[in-house]
Length: 365
Image (tube, rainbow, N blue to C red; front, side):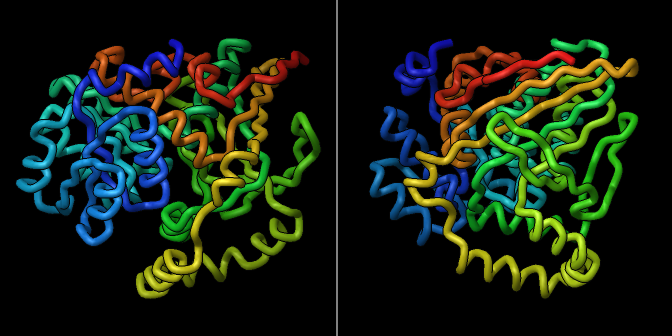
């Protein structure tokens, strides 16, 4: 599908809501959505935060908490789809999805928290029963990498091991950093023989050759540990992210102490509040200029190997593009009710319909 064509007609496909419009990512999506001709309902818990944004963008607004079902249901009653951007999703996704089931509202989110994804991906039958499309991971985590994983599976159908590595300049938003802090006590996660396996933070430090340069990476609990298993059936999955080597070594040295400290609710909440005050996310220049380099590798039991490299826009810029490409497809009825990963819903080549995402190299070994 041509993305620009889909977006130009999006205002005719049904009303949708962006919940969490006052967050860093939510506001960016709202601003770009309006620029492209969408008219979303902007929503959140705080009128003080949401209403000025809605007024500035000439959008309607709705203010409601997610822990009062009657208020959520009333707010969603005339909404065809909700794009949920209010994290940490471990605290918010369940309530929003339950309301979407009650009101027949399609659900998308930009989360990538593995426990949350695991829970959502079990709701397929309920989603079908209620006639609702549920598409978690509709942002940078996990659209590009999910499509990459499926592409690799197509290149090596009997693959038993998947590795995805991401390299590039990364700046976190307050919300993303809060999610990272929230998940510190649980450590890292990989998939081994089809089962999730807890591992320490920075469990593996590995030098990986990307298409542009070699980078130091560490194992990270990225959403594909959950979604790539569903999209591909590959039983062994590890995800890596690039960091400077001194940072990787330091993380390994202090991970035990930090994990213990973050088990305290008081310390964790203090850290999240501090992150919200001190961290602001990448600026417009960084979002427009930074490129993410992604490498995916698969192996089968015989040792055959396939490798694909991918470029994407900076993570938050990518999330804007992926969500605004997925929304019109859902609103226009192109996705059957149920719970889907992005690659399940749209195929491995969907990523290349997103501006700035390309498969740049495929290698056979």
